[in-house]
Length: 188
Image 1 (cartoon, rainbow, N blue to C red):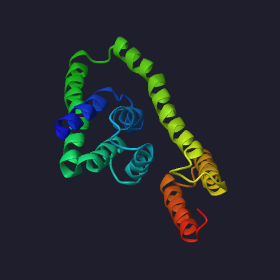
Image 2: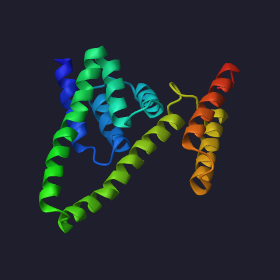
Image 3: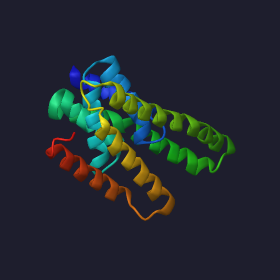
Image 4: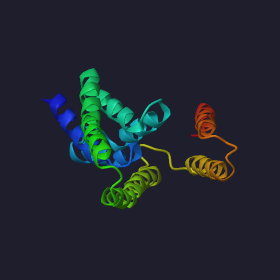
């Protein structure tokens, strides 16, 4: 039963997560954290973080890791298949429609209208993680080191975005190494 439920919930997420993996995070959170309570918010943040660090699409990675945490290997398969099934069929259908009807203005308008919603979904996911880091003192540290590391990462990413001399991968690796060093030193 849990496998079918995982498939169905991630199928709904896959169907409605217009805009990619980051846009799917609030939908996954609503399902596995808020509705079913399969994962705590702290576990979800860990899954989100690992999903970003591993190769592949973040939404599929998150579905696989969440499914594994919830129901083992069978849960991973169920959640992953549920997540990709709608995209697979919608992709085939939309490709056929696009090839048949070409560039239709109303379709372009609908897609342009979805862009602000995608940005809003990503912002909601980011806000949820920020609020968790700031106010949930039971699961995450909220001392100076948390804010310092976050601030340094934001600063480096802002510089990287404007000058393009520092790659995102370098920032991720550097943040991980710095966090490990501070953790081993007992500072975080």
